[in-house]
Length: 259
Ligand SMILES: [Zn+2]
Image (cartoon, rainbow, N blue to C red; front, side, top):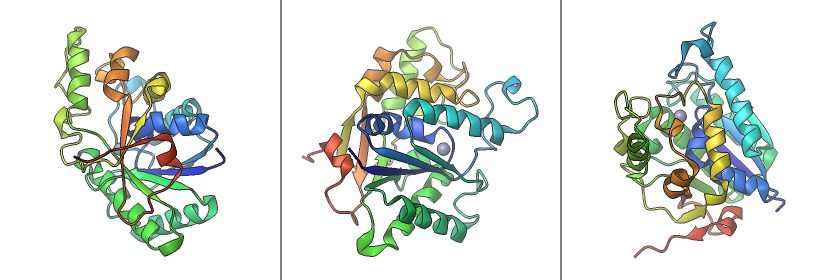
């Protein structure tokens, strides 16, 4: 394929959850996939304290991310150390410069990041959307096409339902304390769908590398490949209005025709 795709996310695990199938599919097609992750996720949840014996969650999550990147076939991971939980406000200018510099160095054919809703109104995700949008916009006519990853509402409810049907009793029916229907609650209409059903085993394997986040009390620990194909087998994207209508991503996806 000879193309480069840059994904910009907030925390280790965002890449696998939001669009791990697409990243793996692009990598398998020969694309050079670069991930820029703005924080080490040091303030996230811990599924099992034994995984973080010295309390340094950021270091553990950095190594979980390296494992997931290997599973997905990513060519490069740039892991920054901005403060988890404060990405919308902290180091504003520095993060802008880092994204711009990465774009100029990698010269991606497409960039993927969160949409305005941050998947479920996560403020760090919204901050990454804002910084990435500004960075791309600042490049003017030279800017690569920008895509926002979205998730249709209902998907996470189905994943929870599948886990419950297998006898899983949820602590609070949630993902990390987030109601399943918060995912995709304010998602804009996608413009592109990417079929990743064949890449579901890799997406699940990558997700499960993030052991501190995907412990046994997480529904992702329970669903099998058949269920994951059904509920997570299509990944959705919306092309930013500032971007041209052609890119490497359009070549592996199907346009969504709005009715
Ligand atoms: Zn995140």
